[in-house]
Length: 142
Image 1: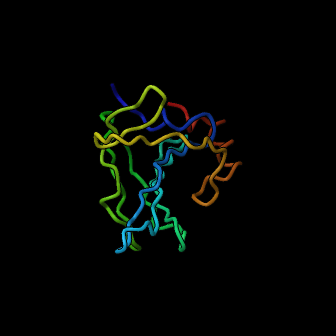
Image 2: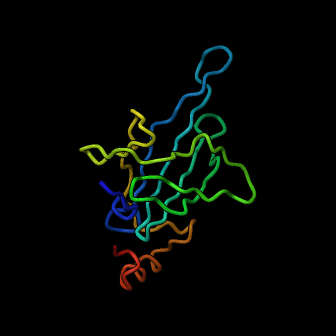
Image 3: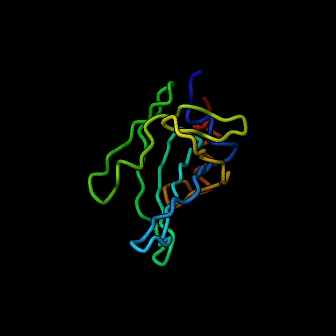
C-alpha cells in the first residue's frame, strides 16, 4: 500500500499525532521528566516533527521539517542548518497504520495517536487565511 502525507492531514489545516511522553529516570530511580513527540501532517503534504519536554523545565526542545514521504513511507528530513536537534528521535519510515488510524513508525509497537485536527498553525506559517486560500486554489488536493 502506498502512503501519501496528505492522507493523514484531516479536513482542515492538518492533524497532530503524538506519542505519550517517555519518562526519564534520575539517578535515584524517580521520574524526573519526560518528552512528548509530535508529528504534524499539513494539508499541503508537509510534515513536521517536534519534541517537547515535561517536568520542572517544560518547554519546546526542537523541531524538524520533513522534505517529503515516499509511497513506501520513508521520510526525508531537512537537517537544520543551525540549532539543536537529535536525529535518534526522528522516525525513519511509516510502517503501518492501525485500524483506529494510529500511525506506527520504524516497526515500533507504540502508536502515534491522533490528538488534534487543527484549523491553523500560525507559528509555522499556516494562518487561517492562508489555509482557506490554499484549499480554495487546490493546494491541498491530491
